[in-house]
Length: 182
Image 1 (cartoon, helix red, strand yellow):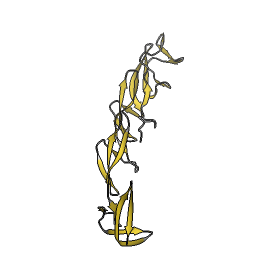
Image 2: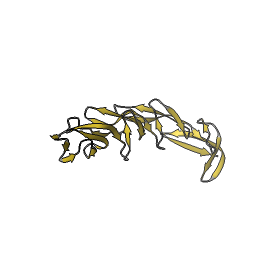
Image 3: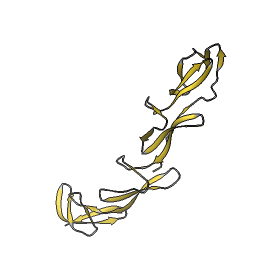
Image 4: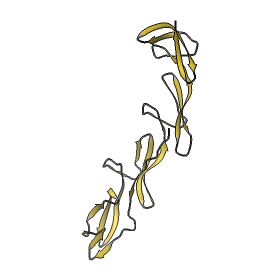
């Protein structure tokens, strides 16, 4: 399983192209009055600028979450088993990934090194590369008719085709469990 890092970045104009004309500001061909606050498409809705005696300055630098919400710097968000923080870096502001976790088939997130058991299988989350994570199987046991885990060779009840059998065992055949009932 490869993990793709998603970074939502909005550009912040630090060297703002501007022209003076009295107490007005002109930015990207648009006139703004002294004291007027505005946004531009290039920076998105979460970066607000102010016209002050012909000078344009950003007065609000927040991160866009992609759903129309703006969040102040330092805000942490979780999405797709990744933790990201809203931060300004150079001329950009956006959510930068700080931690990544493994996502299991049920959509649950697990930290690197974490182990868990699901359906009598023990799993671990491993980092396999700079930005790749894998879920590895550490061990497997048989599962009886009641959801309890049983060792190989141990006798237990098991359901096959809606029929409950009381004397069953299982063994590992390659990577699959094989159940046998008398």
